[in-house]
Image 1 (cartoon, rainbow, N blue to C red):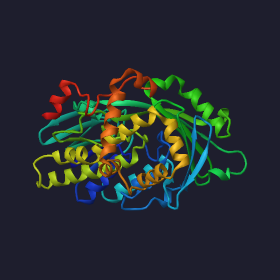
Image 2 (image 1 turned 90 degrees about the vertical axis):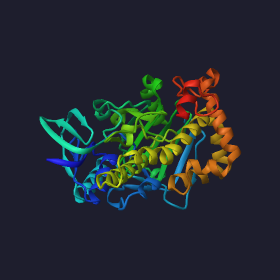
Image 3 (image 1 turned 120 degrees about the vertical axis):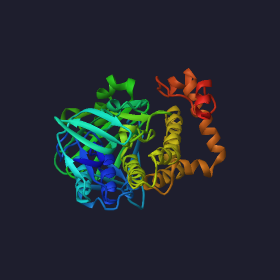
Image 4 (image 1 turned 180 degrees about the vertical axis):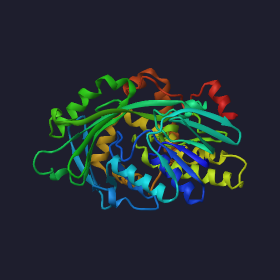
Length: 413
């Protein structure tokens, strides 16, 4: 059977693409190597900004709602900040992804589980995906199979990613659930280069983890143990310990080619500053569906609209996020002081988490700040001393002030 759209991967990016395409009357097939419900390494925090993109609420899969954050610097000097409004819905990917898949199927998409992709045959107006001894034909193929997916490679798309790393596990508190964590998320800053530690409370357990630059991977388990102790638990009580890659798109990395698109983590659309990927997954899935719907309806000759939407919308915000990340890890102690002693940073954090503000919006409102941020970010990426100070060993290319001749030529083309 031929489909309008084949989506490989049924996580938030894939299921969103499938649901939106199906709701526009397109025939959609989702292929996933897992069987749902299935879990996935992830803290399970859905910001209000991400949740507001969906046309349905997440009440049925929300275990707790956080309005406050407990900040700490290298497992010390902790303090709380509280918002009047909800900031994060705490869920489990086991439940969240199941709900998103169900919504896609309800909209008319078909789902095939335990389906392992073996090859992709490309032609100008169709693609043939072979999996589990079967051939599936579609007009458009969407790669939504995450950081370790095979769709991009099998399709010949050149994806360039900076790989961070994270490790997480769960703790089931003994006795009564700790009251201090009932609606508060923990963030420990400065404990790992390029990342942070977190604590996300769930209904009956607590998720604790930390992310970092990839080169810090061998030390991550030991650092996680110290973080667990700081939060008042024993490392021996951790269950479900696992690690995963955190893919961040580098400039020029493929988003699409012909009738093949990449969405979510498969395209590296992770927020570099926060490490959060659910918002970008949903956003890119919706953008992909708009471009696909216009293409299938012959309202557009190609799918370039998707590339334009990402690069001029979400991509610009992620670029600024990367610059903020550079500055933050250069002087994390300073930012913690500002967060503790003023309301400026906390107010901005709340607006970003709720979607009332964007990274680009901050820059547009403060042009002098924009120039300073871009300059310092570029300095971090070309200066060995600053790279060491921020814990960076594999800096990506600068964005503006110190571009090489090759990068200048690429930007002009």
